[in-house]
Length: 322
Ligand code: ZN
Image (cartoon, rainbow, N blue to C red; front, side, top):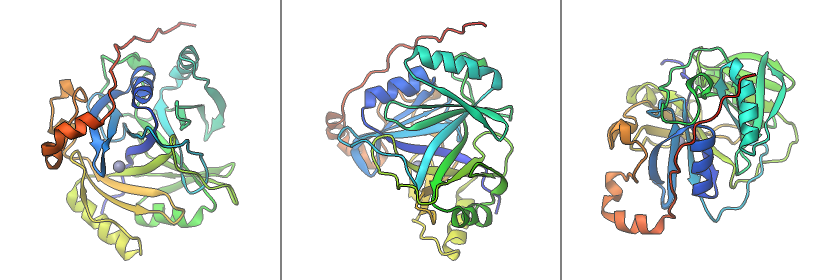
């Protein structure tokens, strides 16, 4: 069994679909690569944002639930999502976000890297981490951000937990992560690769308040596996280690298994294939509502129940030269 290669996607909860699309597409410059519904609740959208084609490791997804209350970040969940950017892009992002009305704080260096911290419109914690690691992604030419400054895919995630050991054991003994180091109560684990999306940090917060699920909460994090047979190996391996793992679910664009970490964080292991071009051409990704075959007969009712939103014209970001 190969070691986990890194993050595949991250799924979170938003409140308003229009505000969510405006922020991730126009402000962060991520392409809306798939517009579909929550397969477990087809009255809700499922938005997928990523690079031009939705490369695993770039995919941020949301369920916009209009009637959900505001979440509160706390222990027992994934608390922050970090994207990588080139070190020379950090200054651009701080100024650009300010011009978009988003206050970003340049935090002290973390494992030697600059980190820009801010929140999305629902209060989800986002970070841009300066990184020189190789990044395998397809740049979205039509997006608002110039290629030199674009997000490079995920850098990693931060889990907030009471205690580190049990989840560290899951990462290292079951999933092939390696302990990298510890700094100010932050324990870092790295997946097989040395590229983007390879870090899981655990921030130890003994006795810290638990998170409250709602808008701005991260629902689960999905790790990458190469194919179906390796996914089945992981399923068996995790079951043998005492984890309660779901059977394989067909998520149309990938196949998934789910389990909870000892600290309560929901994990998924997802396959790279078949990807987002399975039901529409790359040039049109995300432009129309896509439904899997099992919902096709209900398309009219599903469309009628979903709120409308628009994809606003892209405004190219100005790069102010210092
Ligand atoms: Zn998922």
